[in-house]
Image 1 (cartoon, rainbow, N blue to C red):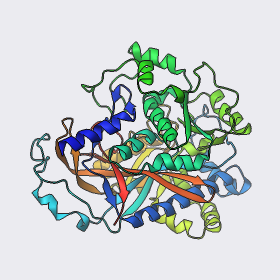
Image 2: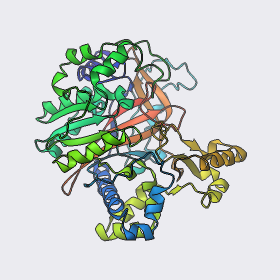
Image 3: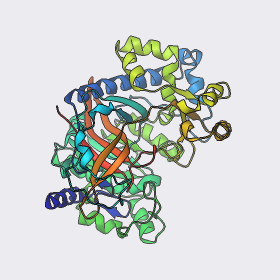
Image 4: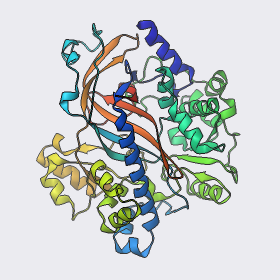
Length: 488
């Protein structure tokens, strides 16, 4: 078994994935894929279709008289900082990766777990003597607490599929969407630590007949020099709490060559091209990550034939879109656009409210039922990855009131969301020596890529993230990652 696990790591590393200075799988690999019933794939596709309807209705209504009268414009404009350009490009959202809370009834945990040591009571590095636990869920529910419009994880979700010997449906799904066009990752240098996972995904596309390249708002040669000089990719980074022992490589350009990634680097230059032809452009970064000139360049590319997977619309970068589901004008148009979409959204998106003086009283009084988080535009990327999350039930009544008062005073929007605890599960994973360990009662988050090709919703790259001891579940060196398979 140890040899098989070693091969698992080798396969993932061979894809070229990394995070900043870490090579290969920087997370804790699950001992086996996470299994959901076959019906779950269809259920997720239905949720994906409904989410795309929500995006269509909101983006079409915003800036119209109906949107203004119905309260949508005021909702989406609330506390958007003056520095954020109010750009609204053409097009539609064709890609989103929601973060789902996973709801599993307790009886779906296998009884075989009783024989496995509990690492909450034993030392964390105690090897497991028995087989890893299995889950056999029959009726999971998926609650989308985030609609991530600029996600990472393409490369490492693909690497997991390769590592565990699963069909590479993420690369295949993108190739089917692209239909011969080039995918262009266009990134903000604030998120440059994901450079190699994007290059790895471009190579994955090439392996299934697709095309992809990577372009950042700072030349890669410049970023490489900064890494070499110790001015970029310094621990701690997001998801890396302390400097790992394997935090070693500093020659970015050599590593690009070592993995044969040169064909997937867009010609490096100080400025962006005036046009990118018929490319499909993925904006990897939010409006407060790019300069206004760069944001307008996305729109110029679109005018000259490019397709924007996540259009240059500032409203897409805000979690207040989730709160738009409360507005009658939005609900009416969703119901008119797709008869079943409203019921699907109501069952798969928790109640979300914009935090305002007139809405805060109930959130104060019902503290155990709510959490808050930045909606976006904070200027420091704290709205993403659970970094601004505050949970009412973890606070005293007095501290919760103080937290809400301080949040109301912030110069950017904050949302409150009904607390929907995700499933806590026992999950086996591999340590650095490929010994099988067990994380007890880890908190789960399911992530799935949705692509919209004409009327088709493609579900691909599903994976489960599990973190111990926290509700702030995100990609991290101490979190488990497991690819998800659908079967009965």
